[in-house]
Amino acid sequence: MFSIFLALVSGQGQIYILMVLFSEITTPFVNLRWYLDVAAQKSSNIYIWNGVALFLGWLVARIILFIYFFIHMAIHFDQVKEIFPLGFYSLLTVPPVLGVMNVIWFWKIVRGLIKTLSKARHSQ
Image 1: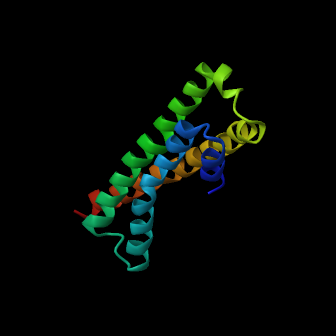
Image 2: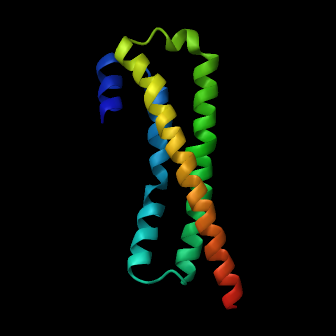
Image 3: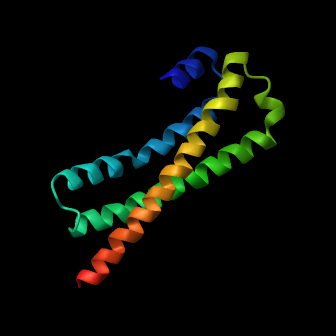
């Protein structure tokens, strides 16, 4: 909400806001995983396919897109510096923190997917 407010008020940095907000496309997979876990459906096909979709979605929306985000910001840093101070410093701090968190969570997703696929393979 903070970043959307800054972009709306200033009229600046919308491309970066859009890229970060796009990462939320993975949220339904995270939520579905939780619901299936609570419903004791961890061995179901939908849980497995949701895990694969979560992995792929996270890879694209939270890893590859963030890499592109940082490359784009670096290439256009002369323009990024022109953003008003609060927006500029927010761009320098918030996305890197989110990026680190996304990598940590991705590592956990990968480990969970490997564990789930391994169990599914051994149960057949």
